[in-house]
Image (tube, rainbow, N blue to C red; front, side, top):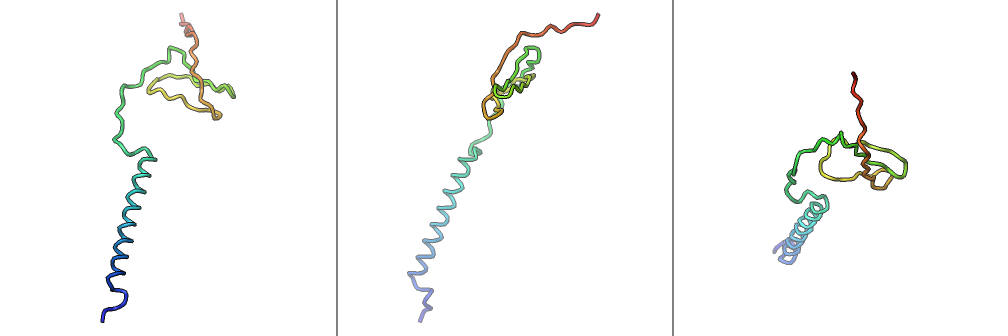
Length: 100
């Protein structure tokens, strides 16, 4: 006589439970990878950052007035400050007086 837990019905239920667990785990990892953004290969940089210190370009927060001078320009991503995107402002270049 076979033990009660080793009957064919229980073994099939255990195998189905393991299969369902594997499917749930696989789908969960795929969803996490898609949400985290690390699903694909890393992007290559298109170009080196450009030196723009002489152009007098600023990022200005219209909420509080904070300003950041842009000295090197890489990929364009306007940062947020006070919860709002900052504005890109170009001002006329200042003449740098030379010492004589």
